[in-house]
Amino acid sequence: METAVAYGAMKAGRVPFDPVAFFTHPRTILRLLSWVFSIVVFSCIVNEGYINIGSERLLCVFNKNAHACNYGMTVGVACFLGSICFLILDVYFPSMSNLKDRKRVVLFDLIFSGVASFLWFVGFCFLANQWQATSPDELPLAQGSDAARAIITFCFFSILSWVCTFFIHIMYMHTFLLSTPPTFSVVQYLNTLSHTSGMNNQQYYSFTNKNIIK
Image (tube, rainbow, N blue to C red; front, top):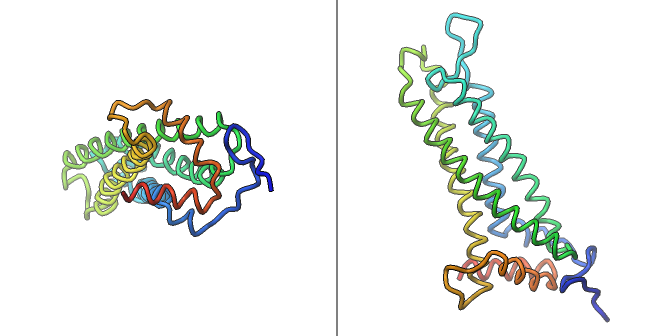
């Protein structure tokens, strides 16, 4: 039986979805972790990140600096939405028949993971600095203390999850370009990535899992 292909990839709709292979893939696990971490950060800020000290005005627990709370909430929501979008794209990626679409997805994933890692790093440093500058007198009965510590902790965890996601792609590059020195080209990687698209879903995830573990 002939296999319909387009630009070296199986046409969309020909690849069955394997939930076990998908959810055990390292990239999917990291996406889910990033998703959970971002939920913890912005939900802690929304629920306990602001305190009321003898006035109607709510103040940020991080040294009364509204920019600190706004930054953490913005990055948290952005990465929450980004994680969902990339999870959906990961489901459909093996079925994409258009090579240009595959290139765009992988390149955007690389860029987003790198930017998210940087933003979480900045947020971790910023929030930790503001928390260190917060006087105990500013937080009667230690209001918001646990939430502030949780926010800083999960900012750090978010750095790790997004950095790992970014370097998974770097490892893919190295795997596909076995004899290429560290100065390999992203464009070359995107071109070689299409060779895995002829596999079915189980083969695709098994292939990438095996090469990550090596």
